[in-house]
Length: 309
Image (tube, rainbow, N blue to C red; front, side):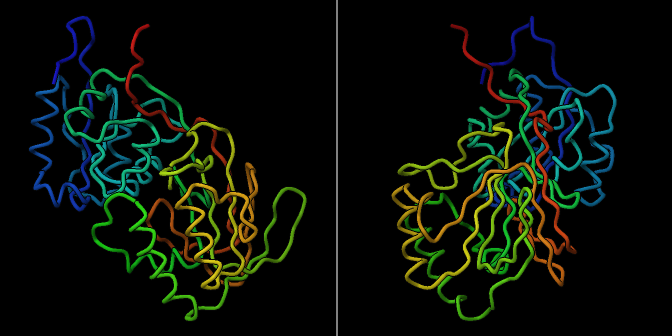
């Protein structure tokens, strides 16, 4: 890996590593080993102020450190959403070391998944402002999902790997097992000036929107599009599940009759009880009403510098 040029000021960063992230556990990496590689990459690593606190408190304390150029976070998408909770609206950017299972945000940003290449981005990358979503104070960067996926989250495989056709079929089989176990969720949906009652198997609020096309499953079209996208599946029989699965597999699903889609910058869901919500893969119970809003360009992120023309 090439060190930054002498003309480039050395960046001072604080490292916050989620020690239970997929690649940290599977690859045998430790925070000390990461710090050594960051030092070798030409970065000045400032000690973490509260290394023994819970992860949200560690990230909040790191964001408050004076004189740092970035908060470097090692982990997956859930860890990055936790970091966004502390960093959204601040000048200090988020540096990403993609060491989770799926690393969807890193892929959407065009970040390298190789660790040394990701460290080079921390040293020489540029800042980019991206959108964030928020529901009742909980920040998410990719999506917020209710219904069956949120219920099934505790049954997720420890290693999911890349989301290919085989993974979609496995997910579909799991959904089939759960279709008859739970009634549909009920809520009062307010979207724009319209309020209506809905019953759904799955509801997702995406920060931006997903990209259609073969091999583009869960890949977003942009991270700064200035809108949220609501997807609603009211009923999910076995036949409808197969149709949706095939649509996702071939990259033509947006206009399927079983799928309702709306672009918006805010929406509200009201219900009689707390709802299980999966934000960027992490499940929380949230008391209604659920108020979703877009926070446009709320988070600064270090991304690869553009090559000079």
